[in-house]
Image (cartoon, rainbow, N blue to C red; front, side, top):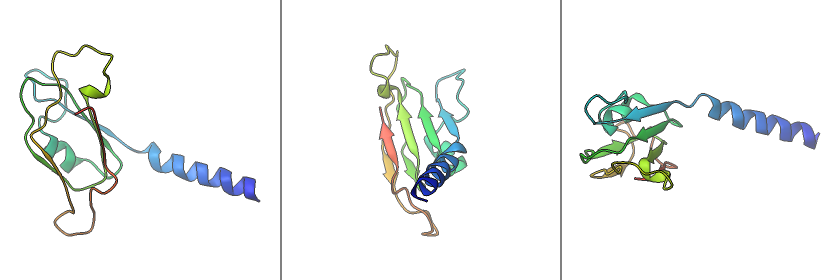
Length: 111
């Protein structure tokens, strides 16, 4: 019985993380990014998604993070020699306007 519970718990955890989406943010000209601002990517994301923010010679604007996200910048790969760093004016982690969700549990790497 304990073995069955463990298998079900692992399967449930894997299923909840399987549907996460990666949203790319890049404010460089002719960039491969889908979004040019962190705020636009946050608005399109759902809780559990990842925002990958490309390095840029331009500072990214302030963004309000209102859902649990993983935010990854170029500095997360220190062995790579990127032309630009991921620099963000500021990130504000808060509740959404309806107080029904928050950025609690968000993670930031390499920014």
